[in-house]
Length: 161
Picture 1 (cartoon, helix red, strand yellow):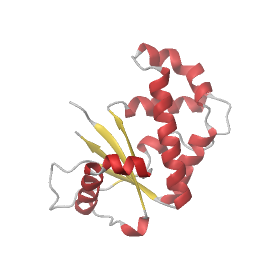
Picture 2: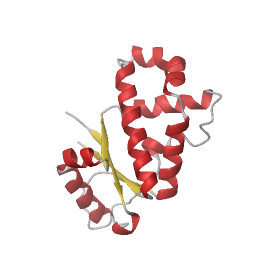
Picture 3: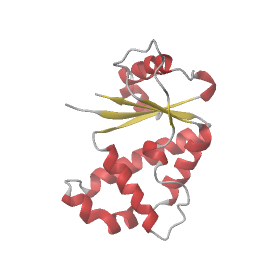
């Protein structure tokens, strides 16, 4: 079974801070993900987003310009609580507002993938990750957050099983 962390950039004024509404919005975005990936407004990570977060957490051990929090790209944002009438099968949702999106973009632009790999690559290789897999996730996230921050967008995150 696949499980995905789905990221969707959106104009903050066009969304509602309501779990039921956001779940429906993200469901439609998931259905349209191929087009949305091509448009640069969405991306996702299959299963391994916790490991991608752990990879970025290694930035704390580097002497780097990455002053922003390494948690922002993956787990950043605030949970959107289920309403009383929400469908219990609706996915967990997080909302990262535009200032957080900008901070995540700054972190991803400042952190050196090669330095991170040099520090923790052996550990991730032992877990079955290849350098290329993590580099692909890094490039996708960096481009996604860069575009979202440039547009002043928020990012909604949903977990799909």
